[in-house]
Image (cartoon, rainbow, N blue to C red; front, side):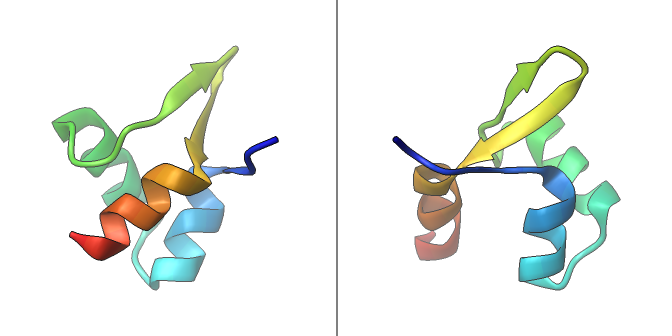
Length: 52
């Protein structure tokens, strides 16, 4: 099963603000799924972002 991260976890790992992660999601630069009221980012998507 693939691991998923919160925007806060991704922001901490990438040393950017949480707001930046949400901006990237809304701009389409980072794919995320909304589960209830919460956003989740897959490990695969995070790796794609880091390669690009």
